[in-house]
Image (cartoon, rainbow, N blue to C red):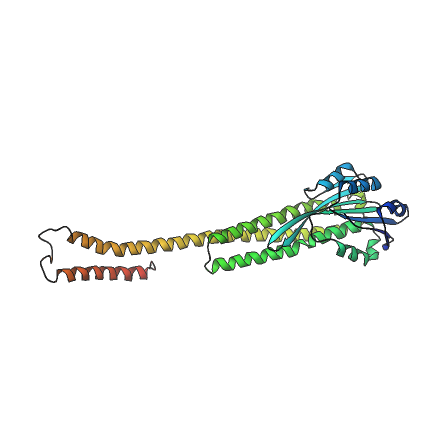
Amino acid sequence: MLVNCVAYEQGQKLADIPVSEIHTYQAKPDCFVWVAMKDPEPDELEALRVEFDLHELAVEDAQHGHQRPKIEEYGASVFVVLRTVEMAGTELHAGEVAIFVGPRYVVSVRRGTRQGFADVRRRTEQEPHLLRHGPPYVLYALMDTVVDRYFPVIDALGDEIEQVEDRIFSGETTRAQVVALYELKRKLLTLAHAAAPLLEVTAKLYGGRVPAACVGLQEYFRDVHDHLVRLEQSLDNLRDTVATAISVNLSLITLQESEVTKRLAGYAALVAVPTMIAGIYGMNFDYMPELRSPFGYPVALAVMAAIDGYLIYRFRKAKWL
C-alpha cells in the first residue's frame, strides 16, 4: 500500500504526487522524492524498482522481510534495514523498515509495524534548513525515530522487572515469578537483536569511508550511534538485573524449602518421643518401671509431655518451629 509520495526542493515541500510523476520531479535540480509504503505488493515494489533503478537483491530483501538490521551499498545508493520494537499490552511486537536512499530519492517500506512515520515527515518538513541535505537527512530522521522508540520499551521492561522483584521480596517466590523473569529475558533478547546490529550500521555512517549517499551528515549519524550505545548499556544492566532476580528467587525458594524441612523434622521429633516410650511400654514385659503402679500411666504421659515441651522450647529457640 502506498502511504504517500511527496516531492521536495531546497528543503521545502512541493506537492504530494502520484508515482507516475516521480520522473518529472526527479529531473529538476535540487529536488528529491520521498515515497513511503506499508506492506507493499510485489508489483508495487517492482514499479519503484524500475522508477528508481533499485537493485534487485535489495528489492527482494524488502519484499520478503525478516532481515537482520544492516546497511548495504549499491553504487551511489544505500539500502538500510531497521527492526522496530513496539509494546502491545505486555507483549513486544517486532516489525521491520527497509529504506532505499539515493541521490534523488528515499523509499521507506515498513512491514509489521503498527506505528507509522507521519510524525517523522512532519518533523523534517518543519526543519527545512536540515531537509536541504536531502535524502541523507530523511534516512537520519527515520533511524533516529526508530532508535528513540526503543527507549519507552526498555523503560516499560524495567518497570516490569521492578514489579517482579517487589513480588519476590514480598514472599511470592513461586514458579510464576521464575516464568515471568524468563519471559522478561526473552523480551530483552528481542530488543537486543533489533538494536545491537545497528551499532555496526551507524558506525559505517559516521566513521571511516562513509557511503556517498550519506556524506555531510556524519555528526547526526554519530548522535544516533551514541543513543544506541546508551541503549546497549541499559540492556546489559537489565539483563544483569534479571539474572540476579532469577538467582535470588531460586535462593529464596531453597530457603523456604529448608524452613519446611526443619519444621517437618521438628514435628517428627515431637512425635518420635511419645512413640518410643509408648512402644517400650507396649512390649508387655513383667518387670518395667511403674508397670503395676497406679501412677504409672500418668507418670509415662508426664515424661512424654516434659520431653516434648523441652524439645518445643529448643526448636523454637533455634527457629525450627
